[in-house]
Image (tube, rainbow, N blue to C red; front, side):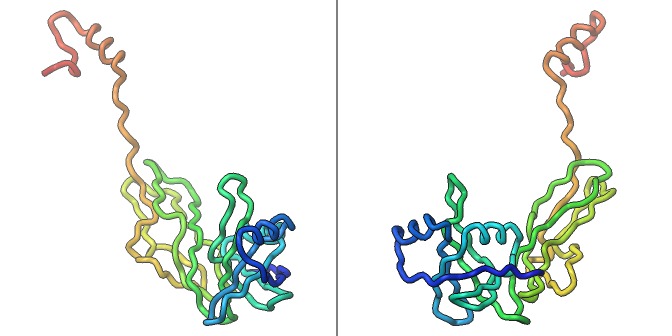
Length: 203
């Protein structure tokens, strides 16, 4: 995984008013914590941070006020406009293992039936500087009744499953049986020979 370099500035004034002032300057309030250190309050450039967060589990190299590696662990957005309001960052070190959720992507087409994906991400443990971007599941040719659990996933090298291996990721179910329209049933009954009853109307 590549690192994204972001310049960090110290943040010494707190509260809603101070946070709004930071955002008016097109920056995002952030807190860096982890490894038993005191939380460090920062402000980060909004545009660069927004671009970085498009990558799941992006590794951020902070420079300036601090020089550390961090993973986003909590992102708050405005519920209406969607802009970044606040970000929590977890301090990480090279070589250490971290637990993250990576996206599950389906490829291929099932042979028949309907594909029902129950799990869109799965928890794995991986080295902080080598977090996989996701895991693919090939469903090509799967038939009705087939299912794939978390334990069936072929995880990228260096990643270890943390989720329960019995957790259902996806399965293939039979398509629903179409019920005859009322008008069709009435037409069939009317078309039946005199003295006979259409099968649908029989007791």
